[in-house]
Length: 82
Image (tube, rainbow, N blue to C red):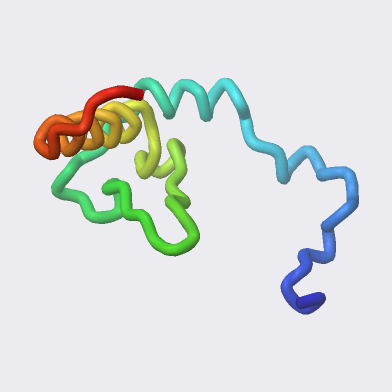
């Protein structure tokens, strides 16, 4: 397992490794994914989803669509409550 540990683990991050939070938030709310573009679709696997707002692969529209799909599924199956 030690071979998978990044050599920077436990170290203070260099500024060039940090993200621009305001740019990330802007991308999350402003970028609109193209459903025809496979790289911009949400895809879940055994490790969960690993998209990024910077790549238009995880943003507000993805959350809204996923939430709506859950609501539609629950309604179709007659599931109510919390």
